Image (cartoon, rainbow, N blue to C red; front, side, top):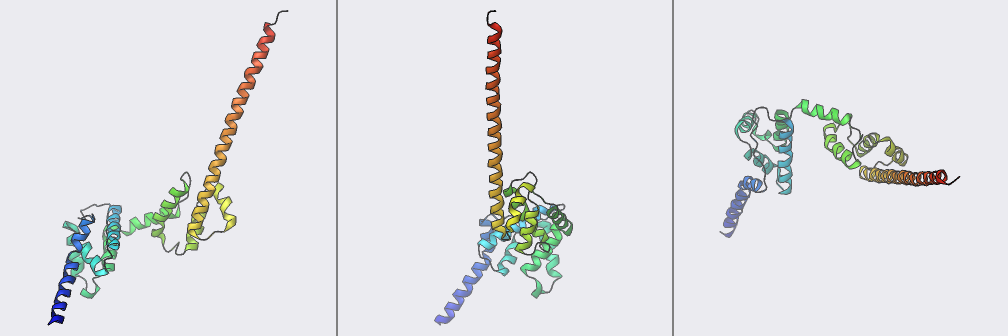
Length: 228
């Protein structure tokens, strides 16, 4: 009898946990997705990423991720999912299927292709190393086939650095990405300090030149005023 009661209690607890995923998501500020016509691809992408991040923090299982995401769909988005679900074998309705079909519907291949091209053309230019790193990491996930390894990440990141930084770092052939970024930031700081010192030297030269010029003018004026 005791074992039966334990099983019933366990089943009830399991159902309560599974049933609470929607409330847990909303309690953690997961947003509703309506999928209205013309929704921007980056908005849909952000929703999926933000929702998955919350579910990862909650240690959700794959099944819970699927149910939780569906619970946040409304209006056109929910109708779209019903169509996908009804046209798919029950065993194939998974979290991965949801992600793939959602991205195909609301993000789209053209958006991904555009971000990939951005990555391929990305260079540091006027950005700081930190800004360049942030943009590099954001766009690199759209080019996973191009930078599939840490070595490839490092080489492409280094190639996009400003010339003045790359010439300092390239001879070290650093292929640990985190270490490479730190070395680039150090080189950037060195260059910044050098520019500050040059500016100080120029200002000092102007100031000294001004004082020297003023003294020469005073001497000339004094000579002119001397009695003959």
